[in-house]
Length: 315
Image (cartoon, rainbow, N blue to C red; front, side):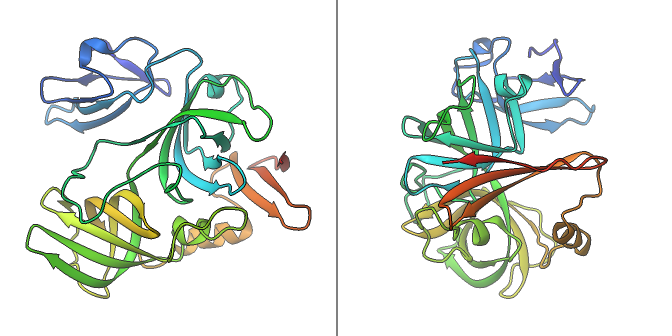
């Protein structure tokens, strides 16, 4: 990507401009970018319709056989440094070679744990950590690997980097505490359709959260307030930010607040119960823990004109 040379995304040609206000992470600046690097980018649409890159991050500087995945952690195994993640977005070698799946198993014994530099983490009333001891199911991550194939347990795809990235949570406000006017903390009951209350209590993983149904959200002057409803006890809001495990308590450094949704949309709920989707040719993935055999399976099902369920065994 250069200011005058468009990048390609899903067959589309997308151009971005940058200047001295663009924030670079993992690289010194624009001149350090090279072709075939996989980057994260935040951009804003200008009045002219063009797109301006506000942030460009490079988590893994080695392009050889590089694959990256973005999505929520599904499970963190208790018996080995292994985690399973749902690949909402996949890029790189494993994707283009057809080896990337929706449920991706990674070993993280040698991974470099990072936190996306998108928030002010200096003035929080807790120490923000993201590492092998604090990672939990439901967090949103950006994973990179240079593996060319799926290896046996407990290696799978060795993660080179694991970066905590922002995510959204919906919840009902239970309590509000003002921290001297500079920030406000909200104790939030997570809605039942959220990932954290469901995934963090699965069998076969180390339980690191004392109460996965609640989160403490910290809002300060840097938070974008896009909500139209007031933030009162009993109201529902959607918070976006970085989610941490602080000694078993879920805490978020909030980047943005929007109006929330108290219940799961009826259409989505009905589709989830029936296992169907409105779009054709959608592949779904589930992690199944067989307590009788002690095995874990990743089950894939393609929903559309042809339904081809399959399961791959994870020792």
